[in-house]
Length: 313
Image 1 (cartoon, rainbow, N blue to C red):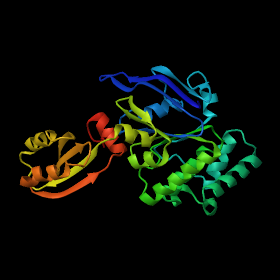
Image 2 (image 1 turned 90 degrees about the horizontal axis):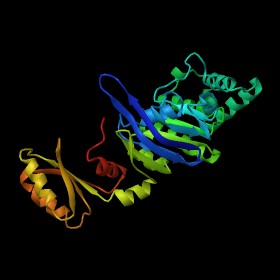
Image 3 (image 1 turned 180 degrees about the vertical axis):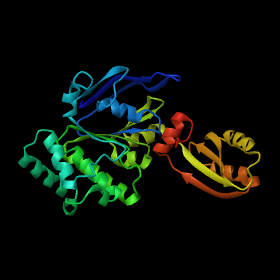
Image 4 (image 1 turned 45 degrees about the horizontal axis):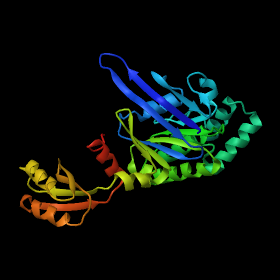
């Protein structure tokens, strides 16, 4: 295992005691893309911060490529690359210089740093941007530079914290392609995200985290097969009075697992659409059905099924 986390706990003491990470255990295989999926405040970023030596755990252990990150942080940093949530490019340096000086910091000779920077510019399709400064680039291009810089010293593991936050759809797809390309280089990727589609698209395995605990861990497809056996019906209704009684009526239907009131109407979770759709529409007719949409099992339904609520903002 390239990343080993055992009994990891982080508690913030103060007027209000906060348990950010609550006994997490996980192991990441070499060469895989591993995702920590969950809402904001779930404990994902704190876990990554401890793994990358930016925070100390209250208890537990993290080993990167066999190195204890608390006992030997300097050695551990040679094995990791980090792309944090926020842009940390040096805005006084060109794209090439950001890569070059990162290599120099990790002990490359001037010639080696130049060759590595040129290689990364080509790999990330940034050759024409080498002399540009970060503030001259789009958010998507800046993120690609950050990823290129993070792997410049050839780390064993790349940690990405919410890598597509704030990116437009086109930039997000380009970032996914850049991350996917690292697999062929044998680089292990550990990423946090609250985007279901991102985890489904990129990750070999996903750990769903909330309140500092791992709720489920498996390949996305197996999670959806084993835990996501819920079809979701979203009903937009004209009349919103009496919806609690409507949800109780839905819950009494065969194959319906749960129902809840939403700002626009009612959401129903069922084991199947067979025999449910017609009953749902019939029961909701008195409330003026404006629209109905059906979503098949997904990582989102897995998450909601585990936590009993929508993702937090």
